[in-house]
Image (cartoon, rainbow, N blue to C red):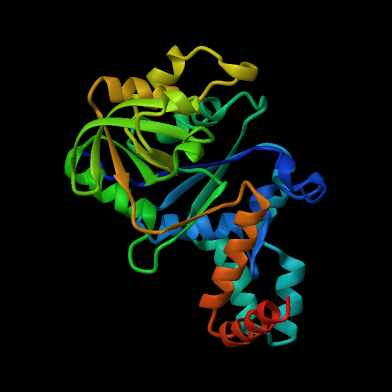
Length: 291
């Protein structure tokens, strides 16, 4: 069984819920404290033992590429001013992994975004991390938890959480026939089911490890609502063949697709920051007492 060495991170969306900010800057570059979300996701990948990353980019992709590229002028200024800590911080994204880019020219669904990675994957199993989802686990990165399940089973693994029935209608539902601890044997996956049709509150949340046959499944897809090809539908095919596991992972998920999720991420990452934690706690306590 081949090891997971590659990851695909789709970040091609317009980020309409963060307009007007995302008119000029991709949503993946939203900062959490002083790091863009895309770097935090990339750190999750490399801390899980993955060495090669493909970003599927679209609108304003040059900003993302710049973050992971050399910046000679800024390098010079920081070195001249002996700001070595800042210099190291901006150099790190350049060398943290082998990074390449592919452009999704037509934004026609998550499945098509994944399909652009076919040549990069070259027949290997791989990880997928959607840019809307920032995860936190101090001990074991979330995508590493999925990799461990893949290494045990050899099957596609979906990262999930138990959510409310109402939340399932905004995400997707994973049905299953049995479970072993936090690992479920998936039998059906439904994209944004109607409330009355929800049979499981296990829902996929932006982390996957998939076998390369997923590309064959994507080829068979037909467009759904708004002409989009949903990655969930390809996973449903794999599940119906008995080759899909769902892991209810340990960790906190921040939904960068909405403003509240973004605010939660900044507050909670700030509370974990040694330099900011106490001052932020004091500020929040005072603020809440005086509202």
